[in-house]
Amino acid sequence: SDHDDHTIITIAYRYYRAARDTNHVHGQEMMMNHVVLRGRHRLVSARRGISIAKNNRTETGDARLWAHQNERLARYVLSKTPPVLLDNPTTAHKDGRPAENTRSLDEYLRWRRWPLAGTPPFDTENQIMASKLLSHPLTYPLTLGNSIPALFFDDQSKETIRICCIGARAEASLPHDYWREMLIMASLSHSCRHWHIDFVGPDVPQNLPPQTIHLSFDTSAASHNEKDQDGDSSTHSSLTMRFFRAPTFHELVESPNNTLHMNDWDGFVLFNPGLGHANLEDGWKDTLDLLFFHAKKPLLLTAHSVLDAQRDTTVLLQKYVDSFDKTHLHYSTNPFASRMEYVDPLFHNSDSSIDHDDTDITTGKHVVSPNHSVLTIRFPPRET
Image (cartoon, rainbow, N blue to C red):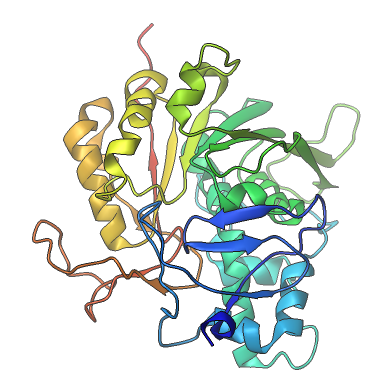
């Protein structure tokens, strides 16, 4: 039946109570729990620029089907996050080039010694499916962590950096073990020790208290880290997360009873916002006006596909190009994109204003994956 035809991938929610969350990318409801649950895909109105109908999946390598058929292995992969290595893993280059172990998801998983092959029957096919499954919860923390150098390259002296994730949904419900990977990734390229992320959006879980993740590992092997004055060579860093349920970002910050202010944050993140999607563009206008005309802080934007990135780029060029240097307005392929692909049932290959000569639509279908493309935007220094 349709009900049993698909699996909804869920994460072992070990650190706080199970929470109901609507996945913004897949149009699927999921109960965060300790198992891989079966469920029904349902067609929903376009949100975040994409909706997924039941029974739509790409023809090759479906990790959802694999998880349904191999529930024990899927649970094992999702719940066995590796411990932090005691030896310092930092190999980032001083000139800003990425560390060798962060250039791709596969390299990162090998470096982190993620248990993809630790338990039979993890043959090659199972390892490929397991990495696809794992790429889905990891795409948010690793995409952000990998973008830290581009966002905050001139903030190396800061002890604390505050980030606002606007329009947050599923990423606000990830267990600590996954967001800890963002801390580990950030430590490869940035000296900041205390990170804060505020999740804002209509689907952020209600009444979640602030939560803090701590990370400590030896940095004695690091070529560019100095020992503390007391001789301690260990690095202690933290990530504090706060949760704000609000219809929109601009309504939250403009509320007379609000205690949050635009200057509270050092940068902003919008995961798969769908800025140029016909159903979403008008809803983003007031928030984008605040970000581009008032805040003018570094921005990280992602898109579901080349087409999605093209639509978002059109909006940015038409309305906000005078606020920043358009020569840097170029989405790149994200090495930490989710590898779980879906077909957009609402796509119609008839918009002549969009260049369709890309890998998304070669078969007449719009194939998408969360955080497929990534863009960082920086603004000129404020005049004093």
